[in-house]
Amino acid sequence: MRIEGDSIVAIGKDVRQAGDTYVDAAGCLLFPGGVDPHTHFDLEVGGTRTSDDFASGTRAAALGGTTTVLDFATQSRGESLAHALAYWHSKADGCSYVDYGFHLAISDLSPVALRELEKLKDAGVSSLKLYLAYKSSMQVDDGTVLRVMQIARKAGLLVAMHCENGDIIDVLVKQAKASGQKSLKSHPATRPIAAEREATGRAIALAEIAGSSLYVVHVSSAAALQVISEARSRGLAVFAETCPQYLLLDASVYDGLNFSAAKYVISPPLRPASNQLALWAGLANGSVTTIGSDHCSFNLKQKELGRDDFSKVPNGAPGVEDRFGLLYTYGVAAGKISLHQFVALSSSNAAKLFGLYPRKGAIAVGSDADVVVWDPTVRKVISAMTHHQRVDLNPYEGMNQTGQARHVFLRGRQIVADGRFIGDRIGVYLRRNPYFPKAGGWPCFDSN
Image (cartoon, rainbow, N blue to C red; front, side):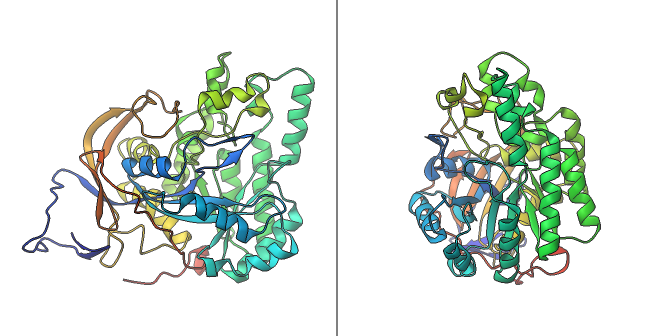
């Protein structure tokens, strides 16, 4: 492979020219840089702020093999979409070590916001996010979802949705607290699988009525995936994202009395281990389309906000650094998915759905030279003591990883060398192509 400037210009055996800098990748695998479609950096939530901002989060991402992240520009109620987008630009501009884009997360569909939706593609935004949960802050009603989907279909926007029934959760949380059940065990009990399954089915029904495609984020259960698979079998353009935590961790972590289990307080919560088989099968058969980290990091001291009330624990966990390696280790190396599936799930599919392909998500002539030289011989143990995320916990503590990013290039510039970070804050905002789907909900891609 030969790189000039930002791009890959040649692939083959005899592409080296006099004066070229040569990087030996013998014994390694070459992957397109990872595309993480689901991060939350510098997010204010529950009276605190995530411990990773765009600088620390993207540096960790690069070391793990991810060169593009899609974060969420989140609208607070009462503000315009333009204000939310400008605010997130102010957080990321000049701070990011990898390239980035924004989904627009909507909480308030005012008449002004309705008009703004039609112009988002002019700002390089090609996706939205709506929440059917978080009743007091982000949850929107079905009418809002339908109207957004109707506009999105015409405006070139893919709608992503957090599918849990927030009304049910709100009642269950209040009932648990009223009966004195305030320990961490109540977190999964008040966010049951049935609430995810119902909300997923409702989101699909609304998308079908609107004639819209749908991207369901962080699918955590076999039941929700079954609803998605049934919709796909009927020809609906419904895409599923899951996360390493739902593939590798399970609800047994909430059973103890130790408050350290707060590091697993995420939404949706971890599910019984019996769900993992269906999720892995979904990766292999294509009913799960992407892997996101849902990186949303809080230190243990921040989690202490909920020591006496599980509902006040900030929801979220780190993972942007570990996503790529975990999928390789427990997917490829374990024989559950192929190398081709790994590339699609970790990079290409997200790039395709979110308007970045073939610039991102491909090793091809004309694509950005985002390249990971992956050394499959390295063995490491994941730990908060050695990771590069700016947080004092890791949900995958003590788990083994096979392989490591030896070298990482971002648009032709080497940012990781021999496993050490050597980059600078050269990440740029990615203006993404509008989402106008063809067969099966996939966009049409420009060829190199």
